[in-house]
Image (cartoon, rainbow, N blue to C red; front, side, top):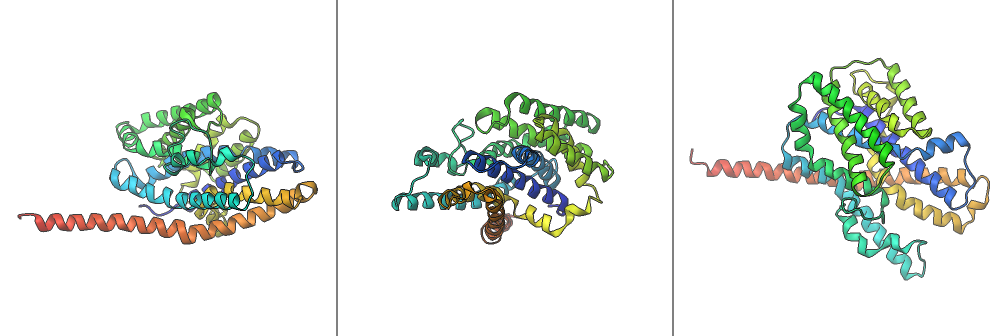
Length: 355
């Protein structure tokens, strides 16, 4: 594995918080909270594009780490170690929480959303492949869709290493156009083939982008311009066009001397815990909205700000704990298990060799 490029970690944290802003704003409006100022509201509600940044970034970073050839079994095991432990822990906590609520006579507003019949497909992260509805920890739809890209990774590597660098740059542009056209045609699809295509085009574009532009040197000012363009285009309902400045932003951030702000420890910390933020923000929001209705915060003009600050601080705190005590230890343990088993197999093979 290569040395971590901190700004790429940081941008993952900012994208995760953008998705959080989307769900907080959309759900508080739905249950009757006062509207936020128009500019803040429009930017927050554009947070669905944060997931498309994830897809692009995932392809970019995995190609950065693994290159155009890799041990496929190791790759899949390490992806499993990255994705599943915290996913299963959060889902288990949700199941327990729903059952406890049922026992004490408290019920959710949408019992079908927490259907036990849908649970096996959400445990295995296969529900998007089958075109099933969102349920339980709904935001895991992107994980389900991106697993298809993981399964296709060797084919993506083969295609990229088979193309000359000048041609690959043109292919990268075509993949970015394809990602934008897919978003335009399918919208922000979250299940079925449209969602899988959304993840796959973004992932492939990111992977090709890494190899085709790794020698590029862009000015730091391009980071500011491209970052602002991403937010503005997404907020103005032009997300399909935002894929292009997103690609520019990744190239700038991966350069040897990226913007210092995105190397700040606090923003980098948000990137470190971004997966925990992503998986925990919907379950926590469900709890927070139930509590807000109980205490009638939705009737106070300042209620949305009090709720927002409290929700964000609580989310960051529990996400840090989940990252520190579940996500990181589980990932490291599973990776060590694979490495130890591989070393053991090599030793056994040598001992059995007749030479």
